[in-house]
Image 1 (spheres, rainbow, N blue to C red):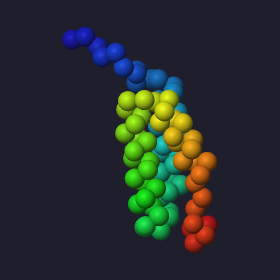
Image 2: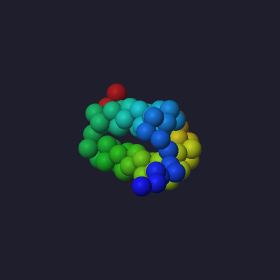
Image 3: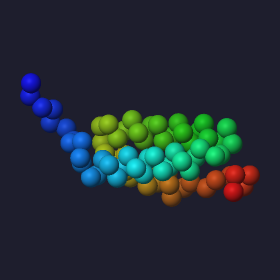
Image 4: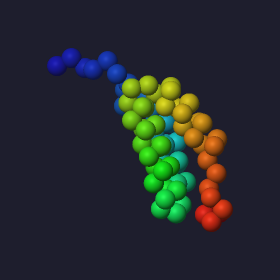
Length: 75
């Protein structure tokens, strides 16, 4: 069987992106249900994108985190 020509399991770039996505989910988790649903959908889109284009997913996550402001009730 020929190995796939994709990222390796120990790829530092993918590991960093996975950790940042995990941390973003943790930021969203305590929010009210309506806000949380919308933001989790955005994170899932970024996660799906990471399967095809890691660099673009990282840039989208950067933008998501830069724009992330918890609603006043969640602060």
